[in-house]
Image (cartoon, rainbow, N blue to C red; front, side, top):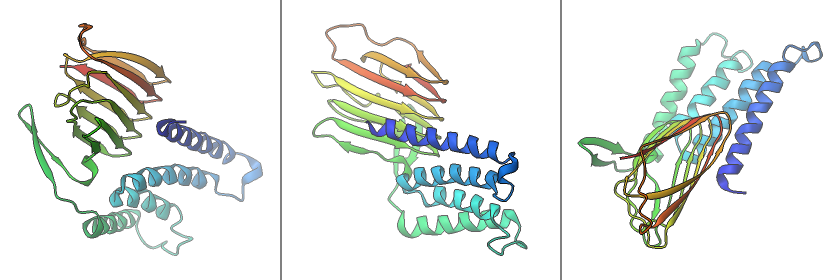
Length: 239
C-alpha cells in the first residue's frame, strides 16, 4: 500500500472513531466516560502525528494545547484561562522550533512574487534520477518545484493548503509518473501548458478541477498522473 493510501486510511479511521465517540457521548451506557473529550483527543492525536512527520514544533503544540484545555481540571490548571494555556504551549513550540528547527531561509522569485521557504517549505529532491517528494500536513505551504528530467514524483497533502509551481521542471524523454494524494485539504498545482499529461482520478466526496489544457503533441513525453482525493479539493492549472 502506498504511503498516501496508508495516511488516508489512518485519517479515515480517526474520523470514524471521532464520530463514534460523539454518538456514544449521548448514550446512557457511557455516562461515566468523557466520550466527547476522547473524540477530540483522537483528532488532536491525528494532527499531532501529521505535524510530527513535518517536524513542526508549533504545529505539534496546538493539539497539545487543545488537549490540555480539555483536561484543565484534571491537570490542576482549573484557575488558568484557556487562552493563556494556548499562548503558553504555542510559545513553547516557537521556542523549541528556534532551538532545534532553524534552517536558513531561501528566497525565490516566481512570476514577480517573492516566496520565503523555511523548514516547512522545502522538499526532498534527487536531481540525479529525477525523483522528488512533496509533503504537507496541517499548515499552508507554497513550493516552487524545479526538477530536471522528472521521472517520478509523490505529492501528499493532508489537512492543509498546498500550492506548487512546476514551470521550472522538465520531463525525462521516457516520460514520468506523478502520484498525488489529497485528504481533507486544498491543493493547487500549476503545470506548464507544454506538458503532455494524462490523469486517472480516484475521487471521494471532494472535488477535482482541471483548468486549461495540456499539450496534445504526441512527440512530447507523457506524464501519467494518479490523483487520489478524499474530502478536499484539487485544482490543476496549465499556464
